[in-house]
Length: 125
Image (cartoon, rainbow, N blue to C red; front, side):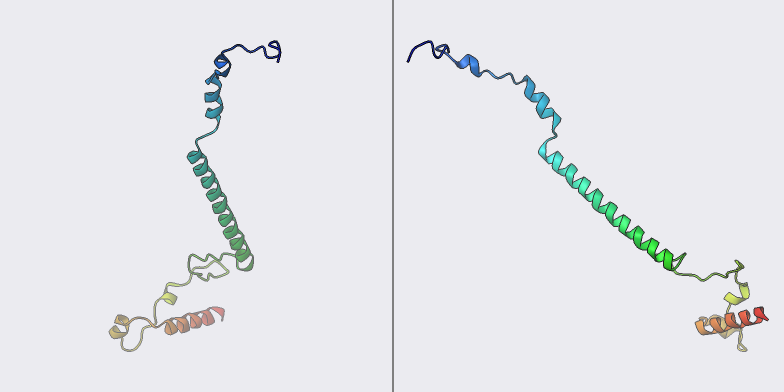
């Protein structure tokens, strides 16, 4: 082969010198793999949490359409339509002829219900 085809010098090590100044700028743009993975997991967890919250909100909205004022985390307490508070006597159990022993015993829910119904009946008439 003729010598003028390859104009390379005898020592070509000078051509294999790489300036690593560019590499720090390129590598600095991307975070380390463990940081990138943890950030991706955090974003995925946030998206899942947002979906769960949105689904719960949709369920609550559907419940509020069926039963306005319903709160599943607390007891459903009926209120009067007129906005009047129930009388204090309606919450107290009716006193019996025995007197003190009846006050010491626990009030019976059926007695309270009957007393409240009687009060409502008296209030209507």
